[in-house]
Length: 172
Image (tube, rainbow, N blue to C red; front, side, top):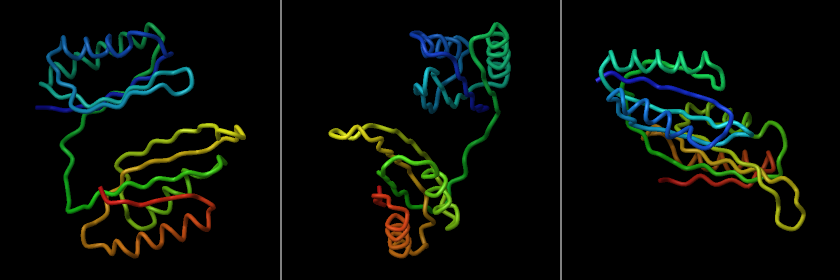
């Protein structure tokens, strides 16, 4: 089985997921993993599909044809199976008054320590009484099994204090 990752972005409207999943299904491909969300006024899809090579080529061709008509952009990339090492999975969560640079500084903290980010989601909401923007970040990270987890937690807590972030690092 061959695999590909596709990413599409289109103006948000009802039916986008149905149309895309029908194309994939009609070609005999299997959706193995996906993330879909509204960002601003756009609907973004990130999807991993698997099937035979000719079906993947047909998918790329159909997406190209649809994109040339306008209305959405897409990326198509063949991929293989991900190699898994000995990792422990942790969830890191951050809450803070919204300001530029939070994602950059948090991801740099983990990158500088060789910690891989598996998934990251952010959201800005409004504080209940004041209406001030509150930034929320949740991520899954992979920590090498023999790394010193206690030291990582302590460093993360110190980092959050220095950056005025309310953060937590928990094992899954």
